[in-house]
Amino acid sequence: MSARNSGKLNRLLAELGDTRLVSSRWLRAHDYSNSLVARYVGSGWLVSPARGVYMRAGGRLQWDGVVRSLQVGEGLPLHVGGRSALALQGHEHYLRLGDAGAITLYGPQSPPGWLGKLPLEQGFEFMGKGPFDLPAVPAAEASEKVLSEVGLTWHSVASGLDALVCSTPERAMLELCDGVSDAAGVYEADALMQAMTTLRPQRVALMLHHCRSIKAKRLFLALADRHRHAWLPRVPLEDVDLGRGKRALVPGGRLHPTYQITLPGDLDEHLA
Image (cartoon, rainbow, N blue to C red; front, side):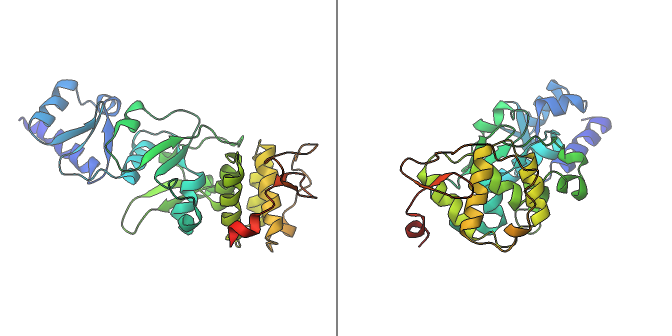
């Protein structure tokens, strides 16, 4: 191998580290031809866990490394949100069994097809843009301040691992509420809301203002009211559109008198 190609290989291996993946598109954009990549694979330097994507031989295929690769390497404005963001921030014991295995991703454009073909224990569930009219922020250029303005934050899955862009609890709870379609979903959202004792009123107000889902906003507020969180009276709601009329979320439920949305009558039993 020539000195030039040897240098290119070393740069690529350093870029990949232990958990990073790169796509064929990324490799072409960084002047790694198809023939050169094939040579790296044939020589045992690279492996391809799915068609169109590569990682360092001996590297660890982990869901967080995959997401980091999409966010920072591929430059996609995707973030971990909803159920998965809440689990990462310490609330996984409130989630329904069987749901925590899917990593919920949000963003304005679909992730690449190879994402669903990786041999990972966890799957990925792409939720689309979600209920907000906030601008997408590419992680590669995002400071904590810029992320904060749209309800996102950098979060490390574990000590020593690269941080991922995730929803803050305020945004994640509204994302979760947006996806609720039955009583089981309300039970889960209610258990999670009980733990939301430290939400920030101004951040809650910002997320409510930019949330387009009337259902999500009403459910969020009704559950917060039910648990009498101290932050709720300090949330300015004057400019928050809560729609008109009643919302029947579950059949035969109990109508919340303030937020006009039906909740299951047996919430207390499920919380216990």
